[in-house]
Amino acid sequence: MGGTPIPNDIKLLDENGKRVDGRRPDEMRPIKIEAGVLNKADGSAYVEWGLNKVLAAVYGPRECHPRHLQNTTRALVQCHYNMAAFSVDDRKRPGPDRRSHEISKITSEALTHVVFTEYFPRTSIDVYIEVLQANAGTRCAGLTAASVALADAGVPMRDLVASCAAGKAADTVMVDLGKEEDNFGQADVPVGYVPRTEEIVLLQMDGELTHDEYTLSLKMAIEGCKKVYEEQRNALKRRYQVRSVDAVEEPKGVA
Ligand code: ADP
Image 1: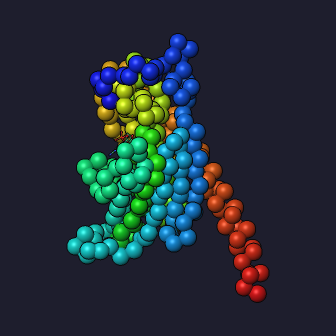
Image 2 (image 1 turned 30 degrees about the horizontal axis):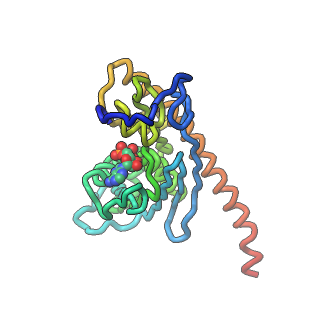
Image 3 (image 1 turned 90 degrees about the vertical axis):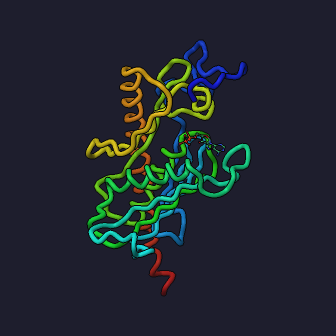
């Protein structure tokens, strides 16, 4: 981002105003969300967003270990973001690095704003985000998945956090940057948004924007978050319907 020369065969915006993957500047990549995909976690969610594939699992609230980390007045929301070795073109060196620490921290902070942490003193709510396939925008996909997984676990929250980025490539402000746009573009602004309260709980910026471009990026990212929010809610509604059917069918199996 910001100054990386664009290879000759990549045109970030063509003469018809279409992006590398054929999208308009205000068009997002397709997004699919499924809640409750893992049996052994308290809550879980799977998100496919363009070519990103991200799984989130939640455990807790449970007693916080080591005990010196415990907060006597509230729960700690502890996120662990990890990119699988096979998630990118060149094998990613396994294990934590600066980037994964940073994303874990900002995701924890964003989710702490919506979870009623004061209901669960001395506990930890552990959120594991595993990126199975990465194609730019994984922090937004991870936060989106984590928020659905928390709801699936029954953790009380003010609202879901929906996340989406906007930015600039080919001198044009656009929503939800893909890999080429992220690599060879000029700026990226990931946002985490709480639709019910209209709060921004995550805001970062990589690259350079004028004030007007920043304002437009933020507006586009929030519009994107609202679309993501609809998908998050639909995923939870589908999950709830499946649960109701299970509840009806379960006694037959027992008998
Ligand atoms: P985000 O995934 O939130 O956009 P970045 O802007 O840091 O986060 O990364 C952009 C993209 O760059 C990632 O989605 C991934 O496709 C790629 N990437 C990030 N880290 C690595 C890495 N260590 N090796 C290879 N590709 C990576």
